[in-house]
Image (cartoon, rainbow, N blue to C red; front, side, top):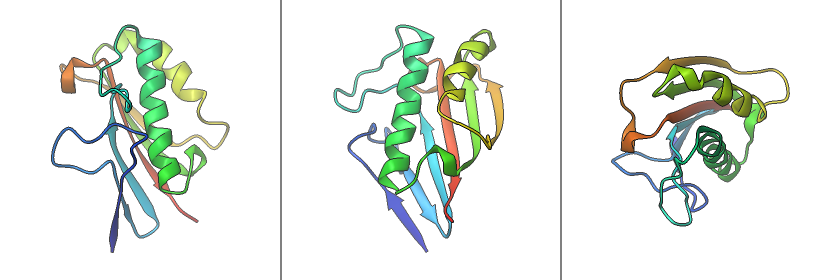
Length: 126
């Protein structure tokens, strides 16, 4: 059985997908970009602000699903420029306290809406 997770505290999907889907004990959260959920505007003025908003959007979806970053077991980070890795990594890391999830970071030639960073997560319940 699958349950669709949706919150107004994160950006609405910009295509035919859900913010997150709970299937069994797993939560699959779609890639988030730096869309301000209140205004729908992109925040891409600088990589620290962009990354923080991406992480806050992920946090809002995790919260709506009844969990938090401590339940995340896998993340995928897409970067437009691997030169931003250190900055993104520092901000991303501040959302995890220990037992870090598995992760890959990939440089992509282009991302939705020409953003610099997109991050998705998989979390487990129980």
